[in-house]
Length: 100
Image (tube, one colour):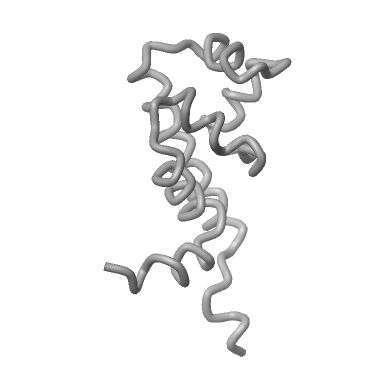
């Protein structure tokens, strides 16, 4: 019963990732980067990975969070906090919803 309280549905997960993708795209565009430019900055083999993230498919690998933050001109700590909000909303809620 308790396990079900904060569980997200697959539909909610898709919505979260789509919202995050829009945000990632806006950060990229604010920096004046194409998808290929960002892929080059991050040493990615395929720029289509950027497209997948921006359309809500896929996740940034955890071990690359700081690289992405820097490439997008973001403070790594704030960037990861936002990623956590959308990738792991239950964990985010435990860590940050009561903070303030």
